[in-house]
Image (cartoon, one colour):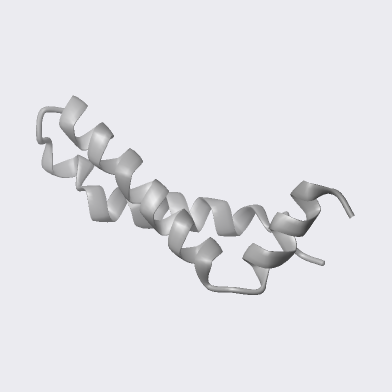
Length: 63
């Protein structure tokens, strides 16, 4: 088992993957919001929800 495989098995067995995905999407959304000069259409919470939905809809993590 490679090192990356071991990390993936660990992350998929715990809620850490979901937490990391949520935090990364939120931080990206905050940066987009700041670059958009506080435009209300670029609400960080709404953007992060859309990003998470996009990642989950990829469905690449099915076994």
